[in-house]
Length: 256
Image 1 (cartoon, rainbow, N blue to C red):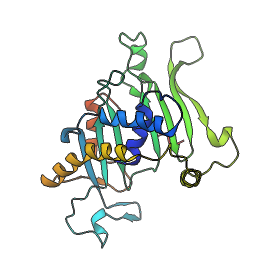
Image 2 (image 1 turned 45 degrees about the vertical axis):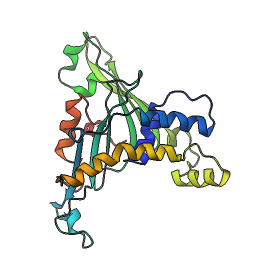
Image 3 (image 1 turned 180 degrees about the vertical axis):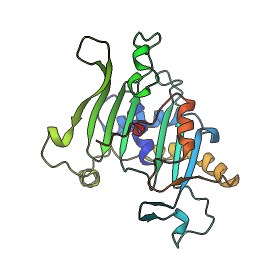
């Protein structure tokens, strides 16, 4: 979370750089990190996966690993709400989630658009948040894609709304082989391309954000919330999202 996800957040939230030069891009990323509010424990949920049986298959707990001390408080899951103090993102929550032994493995950015005040179609939505919220999804891996979830009228004489995806799936649109993420990084390193690599001041800003929180977790001996192996993570993560009127996108069950 401190490394990869925070870099993705900085790239997404940064202002337009002066040019595509590596230093100009990294300057803007550092500005984002330095503008972030300190992480509060009340905006963080940590978890640890536990063993369980599903059908005839048994899944181990984190502490079942012989190399892990019994009673370990090491988290295998974390989610956090972060805020950026600048004119563009003031008051907008950025929720990050990362963990092991979850129901699926993927990396993506989800932009949930705000609800329209006085929405004329509210009666047609009811309590269905999937339809009430338009969402832009940028999937980094696997199956790179960009898709926009929109609400559209179902053809016919009545007024019935449905959710549809405007989908750009790269493997369908471009059938050529897409290089692996680390293949691109190795090539960038060989060619001296630094845009995707972090600078020392960016690393300092990232650790300055997370180090106080990590110390607090250790000093207070915060016990991670348990979640079953192969689940969507601890229940507390959903309460944290609800606190900021956000719904985790993976709840809709779509894995395409």
